[in-house]
Length: 138
View 1 (cartoon, rainbow, N blue to C red):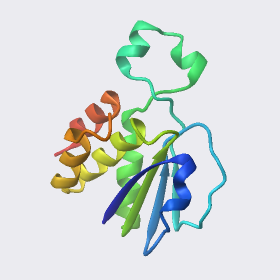
View 2: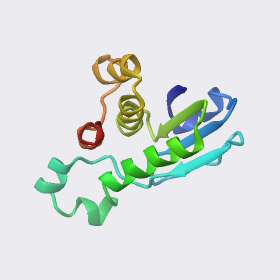
View 3: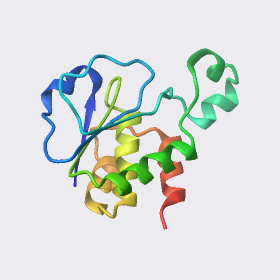
View 4: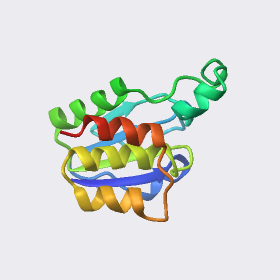
């Protein structure tokens, strides 16, 4: 299974192949350049639990943050669909989508890919999303 992380405006850079799954981790959706076999939409903001605790109006102003139910939904859909390619995007491809891609890699036993995402210097995975996926790992 290949996992790609990309920002929304660059979706045309990765052509779907095999059993493709697109995971859209954003509230704002642009039109898609290609057809995908399966599309999941997780309409969450890029805030963390800590930020919501410090500024309770964040959810009212910017929408929900990622929750355990979102992670479970993603993992259940992956297990059921068995994609050969997963493309994860958010607005900028820096925080939400890397965190979700990390969680998928972690829970699908793709340890090298998970470590590359979490410890590399290319991404800054959302800490709330990372924590949720780590708690789900058996």
